[in-house]
Length: 335
Ligand code: KG4
Ligand code: ZN
Image 1 (cartoon, rainbow, N blue to C red):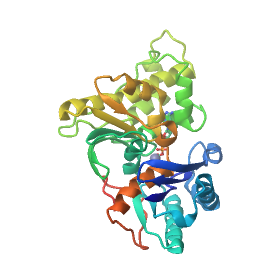
Image 2 (cartoon, rainbow, N blue to C red):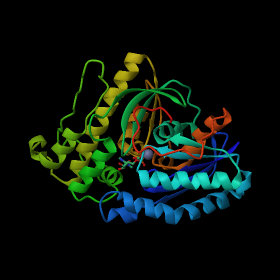
Image 3 (cartoon, rainbow, N blue to C red):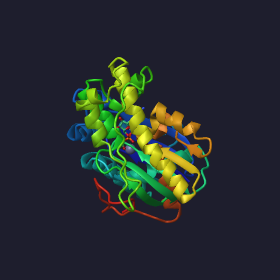
Image 4 (cartoon, rainbow, N blue to C red):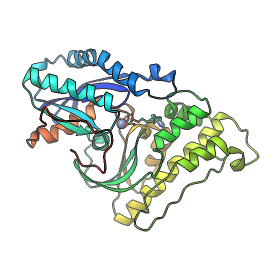
């Protein structure tokens, strides 16, 4: 079964042709980062307008790369939640048009579930696993029981981790996109230069929750208080100390969840899973089975959408032409 996956939830316009939920025949990702760099963040209005301009050429390129014709697909999967409304609408309407024109079924896909599925495109990971979903909009620790069964254990109560990376980079004028820039600078820095605070939330039954706004504020406004007084206060050292604190905060909760629930498989997904320090730490946890997608499949891409859509389509799920977008989602249920 060959599925076209369409992803336009934020500032990446991406499509992929994926066979049987597993094999990527082609993947095209058109990033708008250069345009948004001028504003040090994604401008929603500009993002939707650019999707309108690029979506047709992304689609043509996806089919051309695989030498597959439009009629050869069996169905379409498209992200409809969560994300920027205008951006989501462009992808969803494109999917509806294509489905109507080709007389093929289409199904809407939750972006968060797709990030947690991405790893299955490269590995055969048995369920259940502890999922660490870290992106620009979400930081979630969950039990993934199946491709569509996710139980959230904890989440950030304020900023998402990727958002914290982006805001720190913006306020310190380090460049854009923030996560990638901080990752690069941190490689040349000393993480011991600052002892930034690690929020340790332990609210009754919500002990896996995390928080990043205090850390973000400490890095931007109160650095001096946390300096070791020895190492130079360079951007590299700030980035290394911030990155270590942010990633360790999440990994501590992941380890706690593994211990409590007696689950030894961990899967990371989402843009921040591209972070070098996170990947290194995960690969060092030799007492656990840890997985993270290749860099291209961590950030937003159409392959994870096409991969997950296969499972819905094969069991008979179909979306109607009244399908809508949801910028925010409570929990993980696919609507
Ligand atoms: O999953 P994604 O592409 O989009 C959302 O669904 O939000 O994630 C984007 C986020 C951004 O906050 C970006 O700064 C962060 O992922 N990111 C990184 C790295 N690459 C991207 N954060 C840390 N280190 C990286 N190497
Ligand atoms: Zn994403």
